[in-house]
Length: 246
Length: 245
Image (cartoon, rainbow over all chains, first blue to last red; front, side):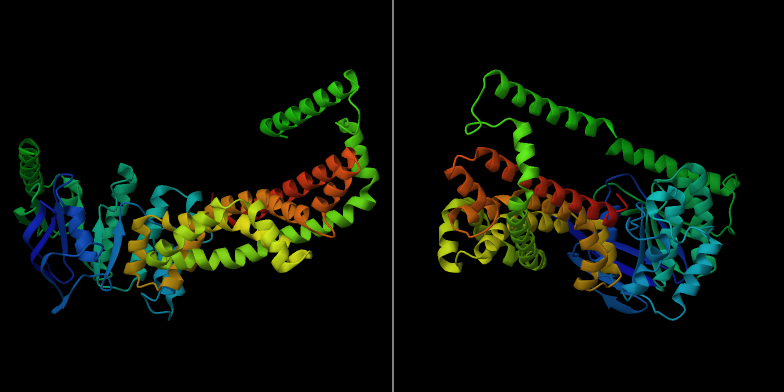
């Protein structure tokens, strides 16, 4: 379980978040949704150690860490594939960097390429394939980390609706088949409702949890489920309120 | 042949044609300004004389490039790895560019003699700055998001260098190298002017003293040809190496 308590980050006079608490259950899918510029990405920067925290405790599986740099896999809006490496080499990068074991890693990557519809494109450079394929390759790379905790920073926001819908089911696979514990931030309410087990609506600066929803509906979900539509309406109205008060 | 190449050739042809016409119309003596036809003829007919000198100059330039790379590449990596080293080296690097090459050339000849070493060092000094700075800027231009990704993977500095920073900086490196090979001839030729026994710079000084201006121009033509060839070769290696661009 990921347990973050009392997390505080300030930049000079600007308080991004103060005494921020969040819990991601083991093998759970927690989604944070909030307006642009509310500090979601700074939260991930603190969690991954890009910027130091001012206060608070970050605990993963009962142990405290300064940050989760060595503990979590990370997938961002940008696929961050290296343009000079073929797709397969990009996927195997965590193995080459020592973030994953060497044993059978290529076999695992080959199987994932087949599973994610990338077979036959192993030797292609990222610039020669579509955005959806690049993001699927980034997903394979995330899986190759062999880390249970996965941080997803708007991983599908740069994609078109159809590709995004396809990749949402692949994100679900991270949880259902690979047993990952996932913390995702997104702007997309539908995406949050379709994927999350726990949905946290956060306020504008200083960021804090305004509302929390437990989503127990089985997955894959349909967005026209009446309960989900109700939650969507609530979240939307809350986000609109936040936008007005911004 | 693409449009830009055609335009470049047309421009060169126009300059040559105007030069030729002026020489003929005004009957300019060849010991002042020989017409391009005479220069081309001399460059070919006197190839037996020009080639050995061109060979020496080319060797000095290539050796200078190698020496420069041997120092610039590790220094760039060191400065990138350690900002304090960068801060300490910056004044020295800028000073090395602020001092005119002409001022250093006689000293290098005194210290290293009339042989090839002083010219190699002159070429190396002149190339060193653009390569060091462009490579360093190339390393520094790497997106922060990629650095975070590599940090999360627990990559060591050398693994980041090999898989991220070097490939990222390659286009910058080649841009610096192109500038370097273009100006390397200046270093070698100035060194030869100050004191040498062979080389196109030495030949130019000798020919100029005897008013063989067509031979001076022929030597310049060979220098230009050598510079263009090296520039083209670097471009070729760049295209082969930086295939993702």
